[in-house]
Length: 171
Image (tube, rainbow, N blue to C red; front, side):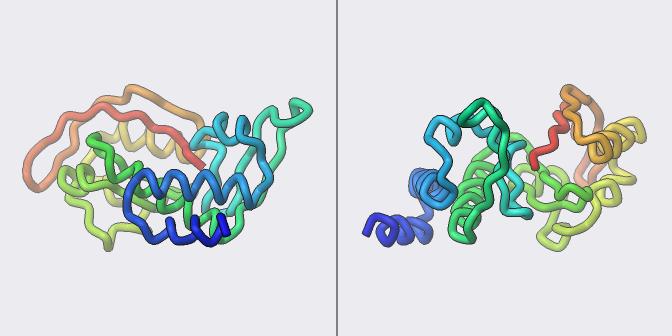
């Protein structure tokens, strides 16, 4: 009964409903413990691969658990809710550097459109960012290591935008 009730949450569009459904389905469908769920970081989540990396779980061991289709859908809806509510510009990519998601602020400032999803991020920004920023972006995509505090100027159709950028692999 509880699962049927929470499956109905998947169609609700409130951030709270999305969070509760994501937490429930991850807990119920993977068997991870509540403290393991609370300790998860964005970088532990591999949505395309349908996996979660649990660090220092039971027995202080690392392990990988697989997500059910329902848990993955709930996490995708929750992640989209979190990302879209951000007031900073946000662009995420797949591991190979193709644009996966961008929020409204990024769309507005960078002139991103739905058709840009799937394009290589370095190609999209090639003539719009300094070569040093593009080089840093390529380096993070290759190494998978975080690089905070990059500053630059985006040259867009409606003028230049100063920005500070944190490059962080999330999956």
